[in-house]
Length: 102
Length: 479
Image (cartoon, rainbow over all chains, first blue to last red):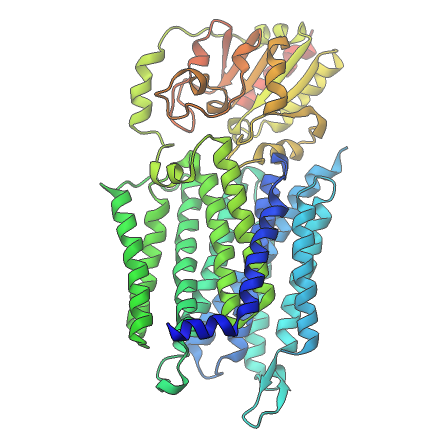
């Protein structure tokens, strides 16, 4: 319990940001027309690929002889980047279709 | 962290917020997506080359000087490999398969979080007590593993179900089993934290149990509810990413993840509202697959149906003033989007006023039908949303329903025992005439009979959507 309180007080800004980000997320999406729900979902999905940053950090910090961690990290990076590149690319492809005629 | 990297992360975070905001408006959406994509690439490059490391002497050096070429080439090849796979999947996918793809990508994101959690935990193995990670850190790691695993298998199950390669699975008392398993997962995680153990065996048990829970969580949910599930899992992946961000004190991960988490939750609720269901009803109700519900409803409808031919339907459309087309997923499956656009243009040239009525959940995910019609160049202003088109049906001469079923089922208004009772629908039964194109009399995706087909004003045009519409177009051309 003491450790938890220590963790909270050491990282208080983190929790401020956490709470504010929740509200921003809600406000940003609240009034999006149905037309855009599919691209929005896939665009947001691409953003969740930000976990790739963590995957890269984990690999950079890994001991070069720790092959298990490196192998798992390798898969984590591949998974993360598929999520990022695939997500942004497919969202762009969809939005391209909306754009071409008007 | 170097100040340069700090600034890059700040910029990336801002692009995420701006990009997401711009994604919400048709005019700016494409640009918004590019902006957040650029921010993401910046964050990735920055992470690769601008991390710093504190040496034992207290000196701060750039991390890339201490990391071996071997590790760097591994990371770069992983990035290249994943980029090619992701790009290939994104370019090859058919627009009808969009929900499957989003679900799959989402699973990859969750998988990434769970792997990071595993590696971080293994760093703790064999470390003496003084240098062990604090229980708060272990809690964060375990949460990343649990949530990451649930979204990983959950998304794969969702993908398999949408793809039709997996049927619903309902264990007896599955709600009870799932809830007990979930509580057991949390309790087991808490136990690991309390024990302050570094046993990898326990972590693998937790991992496998979480993976199984992800499977059992999605397995009983019916196909019609899958969009809600995908959105919910999407939100969870964001939360998993944010938790990993807390682990590294990394703001861009934290904010990016939370934005997805809260935005995903809002979308989930918007979808539930469009179907007049509560989230708990979707998750625990397990309706929406062809099961006992359909059987019970069959007896109520009965009656006789009226068949029509393409030439009769063409005559009817030709002499109408106002025509509304109600497209459903069946249209897209038959690849008939282009033919329907041709039909619409032909009728417009003949002086008929043609519009499309789009139900919020038409297709397999919200807004899916808009994407599918946009693919075949249907003009944006011809697509009318449900609330705007419903008052216009009494003045509509002919409604042409193609491959849609549940979204035009009057049982949503009239039959309190129907599983879709209360769901907002397109009130096509108010139109003067209704033509329904269907392949057969099978029930819709939700597995419910539709009394609209037995309505006196309804004529059924049986056949594959593409073949039937092509015939309709050629008949119209001859008039």
